[in-house]
Length: 464
Ligand code: GLC
Image (cartoon, rainbow, N blue to C red):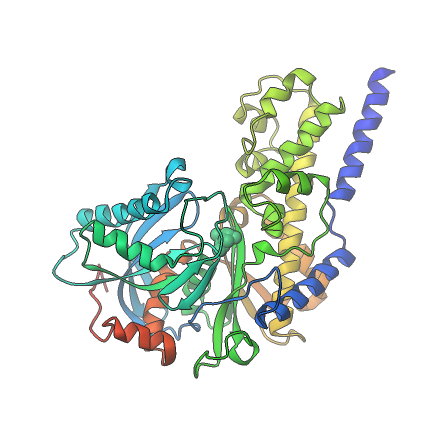
């Protein structure tokens, strides 16, 4: 008897949860309309949750050439890469080094973080025997909201994704990197471009595919960029003679969203309460945390596990999207968390929670992409390739399908005009392309680079 009533309330709870984590087509249309309003305000420099940040570059033409270094900082890893642009849309990586960022560096002092980055470049330079008598041009992919001032200068607006290094918010980050390079005696490294990872991803994919007009990251964080007509970028009238400029939307901060009690709880306990609301519903850093909060609530209500199991779920952010991806595969999820014995009901319930949280995330991304494509091309008469990087897109079972379903519900057969392409490691390669494009652009960006001596031939790497 007790078993039966428990079951009913468990089913009731899960049915209620499905409602709380649903995104109906009507709600999705509101998200699209919300995006359009916030994009308009952001481009005009009015108050908006979408910052719509100018990047100072347009898309590449595919014929850019040269050898560049790239430093890619965005999540828990730093990469230093050597990229060869061979023209005809071909780019290759000739060397890569990866470094894990210790937690104490992410949340320590700004100087400590930039010294760490300079150290990674120093190690790369030594390992690949860079000629110290030549200058080597480096593009810096810095995947945080930056108020860009020029192609190679920008101020960090606010940290995201768990970074909190002191004294960096509000500062110009290329200057901080240059100072750290000088402290290390790495004067042969010249920082010539600063880019967001979304912009790098779009650049890398559009180098070979002119139909590519959106870059999206679905990893630790989430964000997107697209080429905007310069006349619509009203807050930045001095955009120069180019007709388009890529805009970093910082869509992770979008906040006209149907949130539930778990979203509110997660936000309140986060390092950046009130900010990055879409990111907190969508990206890899947060999905596991939402699942953990739901499980804890169910334990408290006596619907799942035992009260004594609570400590297993007590540590914030201990449940990750990698764990979630295992949930539909029997007890693998539980083994990964170190939980030995589970019942079929427990396994089924956890799988259902993960499915609901991940499906809402995928549908929100689908609606967000629909909003941006519809902004660029309201009747949807052209083909659009969306370059996407990040483990959720690449690896999470069913995520891409969820995104596509949302697009089809919103755009019907016109959704077929939108193609997704995985742009793996695009952010680093794309940064190098940015450096090359900037060198060829007239106006502020090009001038700045010329002042830094980009007239000379770039040093070659590998095949380049
Ligand atoms: C966060 C950052 C943003 C970045 C995204 C993906 O949202 O604020 O700049 O593009 O993560 O890495």
